[in-house]
Length: 456
Image (cartoon, rainbow, N blue to C red; front, side, top):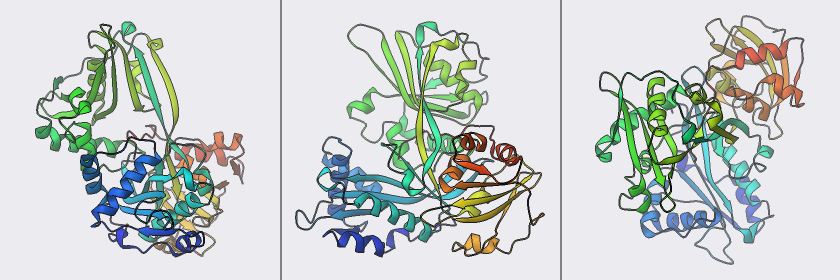
């Protein structure tokens, strides 16, 4: 994360947000990573906001260690309780994988809650706009989040950029039609010893999949059942790994099987990490050929999952798709230059951004190798990368093709999830020259659908 400021936790509270909330008698604070008591109260308020059970002391301790690595902010009502926030938000810099096996500097936003006693006062709007300001201050090219409600974040320039699929497979109709994997699947009997290898596999999967974000160590611990090894969830979890023909681990899956009485069980998983196609297929086969299981349910899978081509009966699979990763473009120059394209080609993008962060005209020039150079055509860029690009030469000073679109539409296109031509049919994109939509469809196309395999 070389492009993002390392002192992000030390930024002062956004003054505009502090003034706006102060006018409502509320106090907007950035919590110190060393204030364990305040972090515990913040975590308890977040659990309440998401309707989760009250956290145990052990949970608060684990979450406090994680929050020390993030920028944690709360809104307080001193007239009621000066220790427990009525609204919460946390954020941190992280890499976002983009097409071409590359990464862009991003700003992750999580834990956004407002107590039901304080709704309809503009608190969420103030916090979300402050997070965009924090991201710009940190030097992030994009901001991102996962949303529990789908109608809240479009007003801030976010758009769904990677969807997630839930697959439900009728185990009784499964007949494997894929090739035999050259390696083997075996159980992980010592999760602690496997932890380092699991982290390496996860990093490789993140790098090969657009839409994934960098993982934090505590997440791998949770997946492996190491977070609370004596807890009910961890004891119900099984972990299996795939080793290739050389004995090198290339993937693993964490799953559980639940049963109701004496009937066949339901196998569920939401975390399968594969660094190779062979590993992914082999782990799928292992899961689908479990005895005494009637249904396999997989969450947070890709919308172009290859599973249906691995089974003789595709109708054994029921698929439900929904939005998952929401993306917001902040620095179009840095964001567009970070990814690779199905080039060559040229576009002028006329971006509308009601909040002002990314508005402007940008010339995108892609070489035969899919490498982009971006020039801001109207000046006025604040971001350092955009300022650098203002005078950067391009092969064509006036590309013939162009689009007029909102910053949210660009976010939807950015990872390859939505085609420009589809957005145009919905009235979200307008071409400014004949054939521009076809050029945009080709340039932004990807050979792997974007996917985010976690919540954050």
